[in-house]
Image (tube, rainbow, N blue to C red; front, side, top):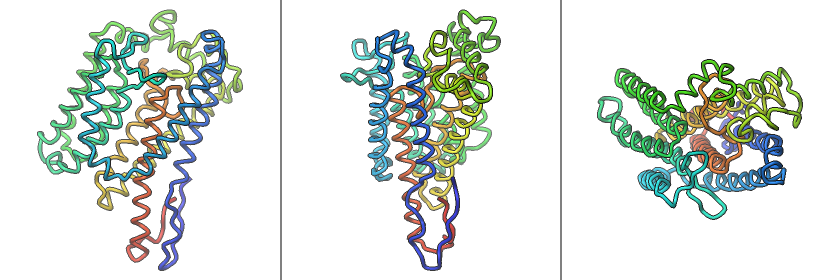
Length: 395
């Protein structure tokens, strides 16, 4: 949904100030998520709570909070994020430490990732996803020359990201840690780091990830199950085999909304980590291809916003847009890859779609920031006028 509108000579009114295509795509994903969370969670909610609408009501409330957060973020000037980058990063670190203090952090399924705040549970690692992007974007504004010319400028932010990784792994949350590190590395790569430095760090990080997987028995079992899931169909490969069965049942067009079987008795976490499998079973290959296209569109749009902002001198806004695109695109890729058996099993939600208030709220806040960066660029394009070459505008 991207097209160009001509500007008449001297006209400044033809260019809209809002990216309706991006907003429509995100809204469609949120709407799909509401429908699929209802479909996927009703059997589980009925068995667990005696109320088939238990998760649906909570997810609807999360959508309300997420939309409110995204709207609020849209009206926050980008310069505020740049000025607050250090304070936000320190706040994120404090929350990562706080969640590990006995008696404060909430533990579920063997992981301590949440801080109870009444009826709401704050997941500090989700906040750190955004705060890390803000911090690295600000760092690239101040030290881009050092990043491009020397090793020290490249390594310094990675040392802080390593501290973040250690705190998140203490929860443990391997998937979120990997997304944060990969996003930071992606931003530094776009910042112009020398290839030999970048490749060296990539090799070291890959070796560290491999060691973390090998030294933790349950992670190593997931890798073994990933390589031959049906040989471990009743133990470590159970989630993946049930997910693959769901996709197999869906075929081209799916078995129909609400008619899935895997969500009822077999597939664990059908409304969170494996909601893509429910979509694949009920909406088929067409539904999954639609999901992939939507996330590709959002990622491409974010990179387009980043490129335009950077070209006009808004370096912080440009890298912030790049980081949002990398983070959302990468998380969607990992979630879909796990459900399809392309990647080893790892607990990450599908942005905008999965049940989970923290992930949904932070994703919508990120989109609000992205829309604000795009709005600022459009205002500058209007102010420049056709005499600066802005005769065609992208909508």
